[in-house]
Image (cartoon, rainbow, N blue to C red):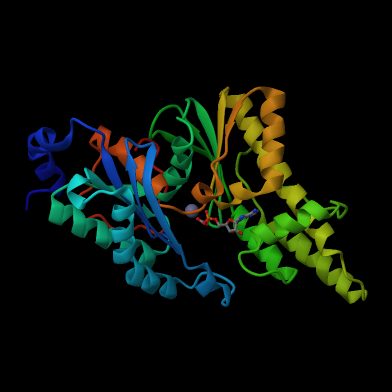
Length: 357
Ligand code: KG4
Ligand code: ZN
């Protein structure tokens, strides 16, 4: 069987004549967790549409994402969301140059829904299929705000990831450090549950933290010799403080618990980011992932960027959380590079960030 990538190469001249003289339209698909999203992005930076359907209300009552439910909801929604994304972009599938789809990391059943849809379109329309790493997507959400300037440091903090990534050029990722246990967002969600806040707890803790005083002493896993993170010790320390207080018949002020926890998380995230900025001598820092919405983290990084004179980009909220526009943006650069996938592209739940994609 001739490989899809090869067949695409054979068809390159035909496609060149047809559409490559104008802007390049990439259709992105993201279904790695609990958001079904389809977007059309032009030249890697102009969002023509970015339709996001969140399943959060469905998973809320279970206190977290239920993988099987997530897959089913993606199946129910994907065709409608695809249609809406094309309508909003005022384009047809014939105007699309390539399909970019998240193929990992994520929930395997959820990933496979997006991948199956992407393959069907690529095959039917005979256009390239491009598998995109989810974290690369979060990083490129920043490119939709302002062109990335290299070398840069990206702090990726979400419900599933905490990663400090160094980049010297497009699609060249060097993971300096990552979490050894809980992701930052996961720690937020677990601490929120311990103080009876609804899922996802991050935004609630953030809101309470603004009103509290960081008066409760909590650990900071700074691990000076490493860029890795660890948040499970901090989470356990909070839970222990709550239990100890309960046993003494006392109740800790929730706002102070939130403020103390947030102070510790932000201290660790910002200290390591600044250390990486120093070591790698970068001029641009970008923030990505759902926890990038955190007010404490945003304001501390802003202060540091002024104090130390580096450029800081923080995407708007809708681009911080999972969306397909960020996937389409990565897809554009992979498309230019000829870094396309074959039709046997598979979902990989624990996909590592490739060093040079
Ligand atoms: O990137 P995202 O939407 O999904 C993943 O790929 O994980 O991130 C969701 C995570 C959740 O853990 C949520 O609690 C956290 O981001 N989050 C926040 C805030 N907003 C969302 N954490 C802290 N402060 C916030 N304001
Ligand atoms: Zn994500």
